[in-house]
Length: 151
Image 1: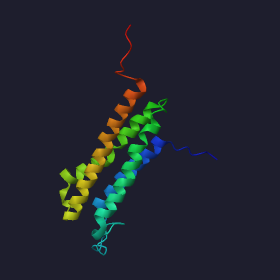
Image 2 (image 1 turned 30 degrees about the vertical axis):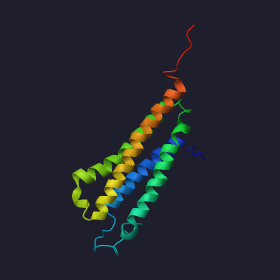
Image 3 (image 1 turned 90 degrees about the horizontal axis):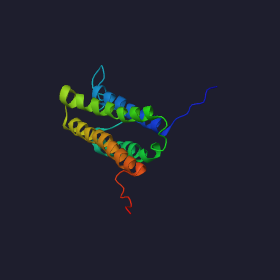
Image 4 (image 1 turned 180 degrees about the vertical axis):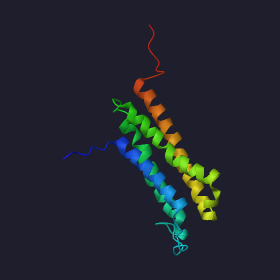
């Protein structure tokens, strides 16, 4: 039986893709049904606690995505997975950007607009914060700009 080996970067990629799928579900299908709205629920989220639920989603997603960066740097033997990890962060950002600018009819309520803006901020923080952390840690690992001794 083959063994499943999940790396830190692999889990990061999976989380980004799962967030993108959740965004598609949330903006495209949640709260709607073929026969009409489903008791005001937005998937697992209720409109009264949407901000609270998004705060937990943001905390869980960003904490893993940003804290896992130092643990993936030593494993530089496979740079392709690192590139995929960075590119995977573009997928949920792309979904929410398309919803805001290309399909605003999916954002019929103020709650959905607020959720879209929060998700945009979460995804932008993941993408640009991840790159900033990678650059900062790469400089430290490679000791770029260190002051050398002159004799």
